[in-house]
Length: 395
Image 1 (cartoon, rainbow, N blue to C red):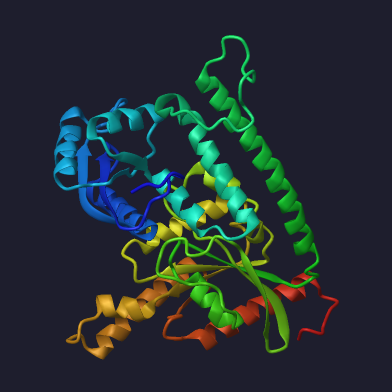
Image 2 (cartoon, rainbow, N blue to C red):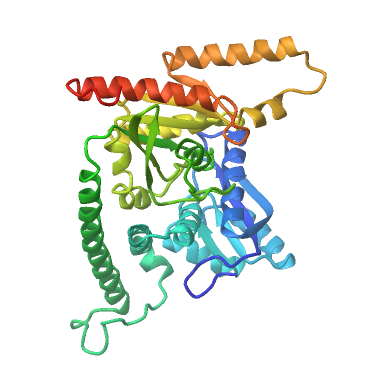
């Protein structure tokens, strides 16, 4: 169920819905739904069924066609379903129209991601960022899905002549957004001061798609205890640790994971958190090599780095979860020499694409971690020589 704060309650039974549009394939949309199911699981919901429909463009009133919506309604009412989740953003009017037919709570991918972020937020900065993104999500949908908001500071006499209740609620949301932006700026100033106080250390940031093992790798490299879990967005807050390899110190940061179709307002709200990425001297791009869509995930991260103006930095591409890759791709009858040939071809491919800046590891099994440390150390020392040629105490 959904609680009074519009958050998903554990063990909710959900149905997923997607439209296969004219520029998409059925396989691609199924990949999106796989990820949506993982998001739903992360939020505490159990996926009971998926519905897809081929349409040139989504229906402006109900996103899916009338017949498909009736099919969904019949299933939902017969299976005690609590929640309908659409893979693409819905307008307020679409949400209302769908709910009028199916009679269950309806949300979209963006709302689901915001719910997960709200659950995962721990620091004051993350909480404000998520709340800001939630209000920015709600604002354009007020007219279509309007339900009367609480009158906090907007009681009798607060409305102008002829002003409707929805206009009052819109003003409440806008005032809240303005307040949250001011609060976020204050927190950002404190964070900027903290970053300035870190001195002249070379900064290294871990980036990557969500759930690729960044936090596990952070723990290995820094010997710290960063929260790691096999769920999407296990951590939202940037964690920074001082690390020393062979008397060479540097700062290592773990950042929030990226994902496809990440809500625009969430990206905007979290740009301050991603300052660690923009200000980093070296990026370590962690990729889950065992995932079937690892190249798509890699491209999503690269695109986001380009949007952050951080793609021109030195990047070490770390292909993680080689243990899972072998488990999923090598059967017991495959000869060792064939396995080695496949792995060599994989290594050669990415060595060429990354111009020698890639390495294959298993953070879980600690495979190739010493080689990764040596790789990072070389790059960090090169950066010190470029940045501070007059300093020799690190070498």
